[in-house]
Image (cartoon, rainbow, N blue to C red):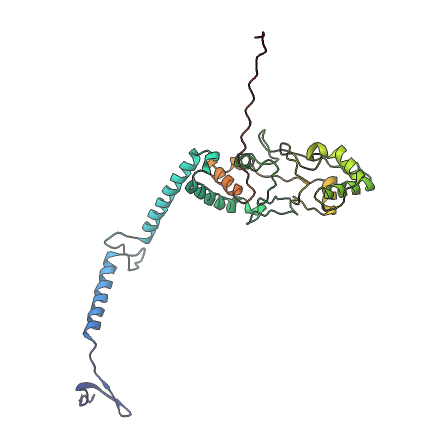
Length: 303
């Protein structure tokens, strides 16, 4: 039997066990601790009755309050969808030229466009929109735009695509000059194209070949032509590389990329948000108002 006794120094009864002369006192727990423990037990029992708690064969107990984490998630998703719908409706009825005047809506459109870009565009243009020279995917962060860089022009390009089927698509083509130049003329032409962006010194033979064959699209000084989608050649931005080999290959057998007509795949609001995001990457241009045609003055004495 346990040999219980009262410890004289403390006045506390021992539990009756002894190990090598060491005895354990039967010290009672503090009253505050006991009441806290009782409260947690009561709280746990009440919780299991009020909320889902016990797993059963086919499903868990539902709880008297009827709350579930799935239900709460559904409510939060529904609220988020309603908020997005409100934003989408505002973006839908706001003209692109007026979005910049509404900072809050512009920020929301940019965020939505960034999300759409990650889903639909990073496969070609890259996660940072830096493009790929080897594959001919343009960098969207710079200041060069084949068909214009204001929001209206960007929206048109995204909507109708490039080199796709349809009358409204962006379309351009560069002829293949394979076999049309001898080696000396071709080398001179390539050297002249590189000279437009200060990569080489100009030469008369290359300038003559450029003026005869290339200036009609790219401009006399390599300034390009947005109406034709002809790239600018007199800056440091290159779609497929600035090396002599890359330019030679593009002259002889030009590679021309294509972009889907996203207006057939995405809703108009998503296209508009993509437009805002692409425009905000760094190279976006302001709207340019078309000058009004001057009135025609009537000559004296004539109707």
